[in-house]
Amino acid sequence: MSDINSWIDSEVKSGDVVLFMKGTPNFPQCGFSGQLVQILDYLGVDYKGVNVLDNDELRQGIKDYAQWPTIPQLYVKGEFLGGCDIVREMFQANELQDHLKGAGITIRETA
Amino acid sequence: MPMNANDIEVMIKAALPDAVVTIRDLAGDGDHYAAEIVSESFRGKSRVQQHQMVYQALQGNMGGALHALALQTSAPE
Image 1 (tube, rainbow over the protein chains, first blue to last red):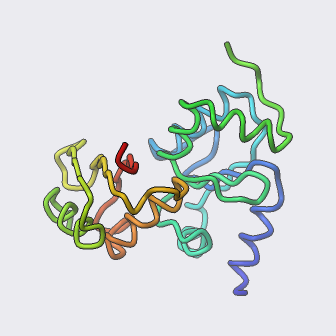
Image 2: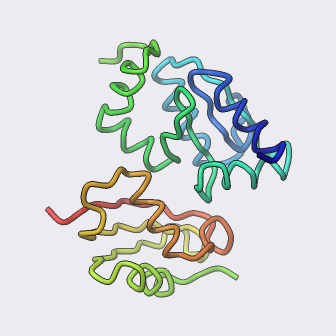
């Protein structure tokens, strides 16, 4: 496993919810990344933002790691959940909330 | 070199011959599209797998020539 791949692997497993994104949670630098930040903040989920713009090797490495060509990418308990479309679709269908609760992750109970 | 909607549809149909593809141009810049794809080959697959099938059909253009493609995939009702 190349070092960027093992670094990504450790990052993915370093937290319950890890969001590889462009920018940071406080300063998303891409509309799609910003959408996932909004969803996670709305749900009050604790998550770790990893800024792929910090390092080109990471930016490409994460796409190879998940066999997924775009950013953002959301990982829950080390498992790739999806990009912006899928997570938003899951959120709208309440599947994201169930998946997080099922993984033992506390979320803010919304109306 | 941005892609046009027709290129996207042709590539998807080459890989998923039965697919019904509806493409909306979100920004008119050849870079931001939304696509709705209905195909029997999606049945029983997770959303991630369905989207990965579409990305493979686009032969590496996704994330390169094509910056944003919002996907909505499903099997026929």
